[in-house]
Structures are given as structure tokens and as C-alpha cells.
Length: 203
Length: 194
Image (cartoon, rainbow over all chains, first blue to last red; front, side):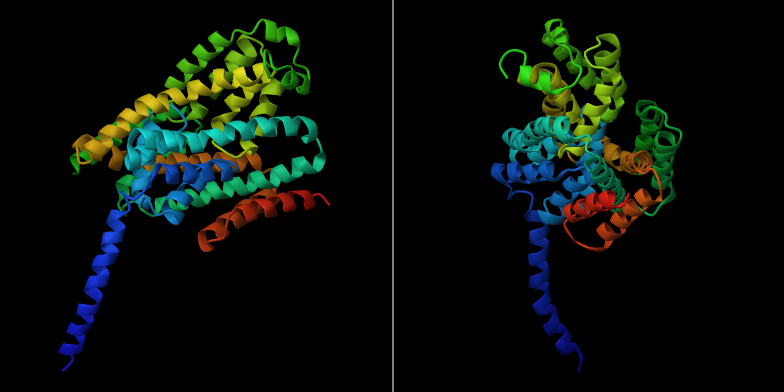
């Protein structure tokens, strides 16, 4: 009796499901250089108090170019390379979707505007920066910026597997740099080979 | 702009023109280029070295001027590393901007492009898989460390922490554009002393 309606239901939902899956896996090819330039321009121009929060928001939530996990993987590779981490991520995301010129378009959007804006802000600050209410407004905005970074890391941590080893490495990295304030390079030199080896062994 | 960027110099208190005459932009460029190749883990790793070069070794800026430039760049939109661009501007106008900003780009456009290429080409290579899997938790720990260091640096009393935690709660629950939060934070900062 009840088997028929269930079958019908499957016939309706399966194509829809397939369509959703196709959409999820096809987003990799559909990004142009102009889109890259515009997206990274938007990221850089809204990046008050650090670019991490805005990059995650644009690439994962707004454009849906990357999943949470892909974002974290690219960011992690970027952290191993010299230079600003988000700039390295910008290069690799641009390269992934549109090759060399895609990387260049993304970098142009990401660094071009801030170059001009930071100089403009420098001039403004020299003229108005010492007004007390400017200082207080900046103080309030810095507190918001700290909150944005905290919220970003909470969202990213949700993709970590629920096993003790990843969380142990995460906690050790946090304690080394955030609590003990040891130089990043030492902490990475101590933890990274160990973490990569453990991941290699458990593949 | 032109030669020497007299206008930015004039706007910045206390920078004497004699600094300009002794400034070797080529040496500055080369030094920054070397430093950025060493900046594994992000710009904060070479911050002390840039400070040492600009303030202590060559007396291009005073410590106070360096701190002010750094603060302005933190407030401006864009990556936090842009303070090097502003240092260039204060030292030599647009020529200085080029001398201090291009070095930041070089590692990212060479090494990173190469690694990005290899990673896209061989996404299933065991070494890349192990690096991505193994280091991902460390990345999260490091970003969490940055967030707490930033939080402790910018918040001087409970009001600052309140703004920070309200921001976290809002961002995790509501899809609002956080620029509104910045406007709210600025307003709260202004009203906080009244």
C-alpha cells in the first residue's frame, strides 16, 4: 500500500538531488578573471581589521566558490609559504579558477585598492587622527575586528574531525603562540613535521 | 609626488628632509625583498626585523612614528601588512610605495604560484594530502591565537570585551553585513566616555 507513493517520491527527488550535486561540483569552472578581480576588490575594501573574516565570507558564503574545507586547505598551504597568508590564498584561489592571469587578476583586486586607500588614510590621519572622538571610534572598531576574527575561527573549527589528535595539535599551536608567545617559526618547526607525519601514517 | 614626495614629508610631523637625502631606496627594496622571503607564517614574523631596519639601524623613522604608521594601516581596509606601503609613502612618496610594496608581492607571485600549480595538478599526491590534513588543525590553533592576542591588545576594559563578544554572537547567528557592526563599534566607542 505505502510502497507506491514512496517510489513516486523517489522519482521526483532523485533528479533534483542530482541537480544539486552537479551544481555543487561544477562551481569550480565558472569563474572569470573579472569576477575574481571584483570579488577580491570587495574583500580588500571591506577588510577592516584583517582580511581573514571577509575572505571567508566572500568565497564561501557569498560566491560559494569554495567549501569550508577547501578554504581551510588553501589557507593552510598559504601559511607555509612566505608572505601575507591571505595574499598567498588570493594567488592560489585565482590560479585555481583561471590560471596565471586569474592569480594576477585576484592579486590586483586584493592589493591595488588598499595601496591607494592606506596612503589616503595616512594623509587623513595626519590631519584629523588626534581628535579624541576619532581615537574612541577607532577603539570601538578594533574591538569589533577582534570579534570578527574570533567568529571566523569558530566557524572554521567546525570542519575539524571529531578526533583527539587534530584538536591536540590545534591546542598546542594555540598555547605555543597565543599563551607562551613563542616565535611562530619555532612553534611551526616543532609541530608541523610531527603533524604531517601523523596524518601521513593514518592515511 | 615627483622627486622626494615633499607633500607627504611635510604632512608627517618631525621627519626631517635630511633623511630624504640619505635614503637609499635600492637598499630599502633589497632589504624588504629578503625579509619577505623569510616571512613564513605571515607578516607578523618579520615585524621586529622591519622595525629594527627602519628605526634602529637606519633611523629613517622614530619609534613613535613607526607605531603611528602601523596603527593607521591596521585601521585601513586591506591586509594588515600594508603598513610597509605607508612606510614607503612617508619616506619617499610614490617611489617609496613601490620600493616597499613590490617586495611583499614577489614571494606570493613566484613561490606561491608554483605551489598552487603543483597542488592543483597533483591534488591527490600523498604529500599534499598529508600536509593539508596534518596542518589544518595547527592553522586553526594559530588563527585562534591571533584572535585572542588581538582581543587582549585592543580591549582595555570590560566595555571593549563586551563589544568583541557581542560581535562574535551576532556573526555566528545573523547573516548581517558586519560593516554595520563596525559602525556600531565606532558609535559605542564615542559614546563610551560620555
